[in-house]
Amino acid sequence: MSDITVANGTIPGVGSSLLPHQNSTTVQIGPSPSITDSQRSELERYMRRDGIFVSAFEQQRQMQAALIHGKQLEIRQAAQAGADIFGPGYNPGYGNGSNIASNNGLAPNVFHIVYPAHRRRARKSKEFTFTKAMMEEQATKDNVLVPIRLEIEVDGLVLRDTFTWNLHESLITPEHFAEVLCEDLQFPTHQFAPQISRAIREQIQDYHLPALSVTETSLADQDPPASEASISGQELRILIKIDITVANTSLVDQFEWDISCPNNDPERFAEVLASELGLGGEFRTAIAHSIREQVQTHTKCLNLIGYNYDGSSVHDEDLRGSFLPKISSILRDEEAVEQFTPILEKLTEPEIEKLERDRERDKRAHRSFAGSAATRPKFDQQIGTDNEEDDHGP
Image 1 (tube, rainbow, N blue to C red):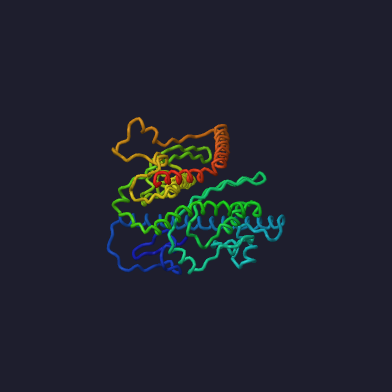
Image 2: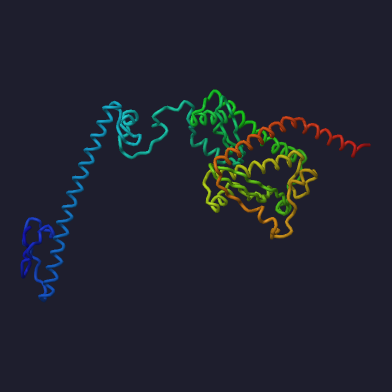
């Protein structure tokens, strides 16, 4: 390391790399103001420290370069060892190795977005491909979400899933959705896809027909629409009961829900509730789906009896009993507060198994009851018709 000569002295031990002139060890700084001996000593000390820092920084840079070179050599050796074992197609790169580069032209081991067209294995089912015009047309339609529940068992394989389906969906058919779902879950398509699509269509039909019949009836009778005041004044509050288990966490809760209020959003409510309780996304979707199922049950019953949603009282006595009375006080009774408090529990393995057995038993009982009551609506409808004839007879 050479010395640097300043206007009125030489500073020993300071390299010339500190100054912009690299080819000269003497730099003419120009006339400088007179400085005291103490100031000169401080300046020399600062410059000496800068020289030490430059030397340490250069040494560190060389060490880092040597380390990087060594790691690159290790990676090449590991890749060569993998190629010796798995063949020349092996190349570590988190799924973006040389095979992808050779098939779709993507550079190996370089960050890039992998689109469906770059998939290693071609999808057996048809891809979801929509034009911009098709998507714009679908966007103009209202979203009417239908709760769908799948419980299918074939040859020991059990599929249980819940989701919502847009009643006005025109881009994806249940058959196409079923094929993609089976392929994603690696279920036999020929066994599960027909049952999945059939279950979806049946639940859509069950949701669609009552709403359509009410609309047609109202149009045929030419009844004037209910005013906003009457609609906002009506109360169709029901009691929503939640009993959901995800992994080993159980949530039990109940709350009131007004099915006549258009501002009530099950997904938004579920998001807030799950956030307040510190629950994950699986609970959000399960809560929203449970709300929609219970709301759909009451809405279907109202449509079947021809309710006009005009604020009037429900004339069916049994159905009227399933709705809560009008609110007389904003404060809940003290003895009822505990019933409307969410309960979170951590279940053990025996408790989870017992809960699963109980649910299977309840499902079998529900299917048995549904089968035995299949003819009851016609019988009740006939009785209602006979009663009306007796009341309005000659």
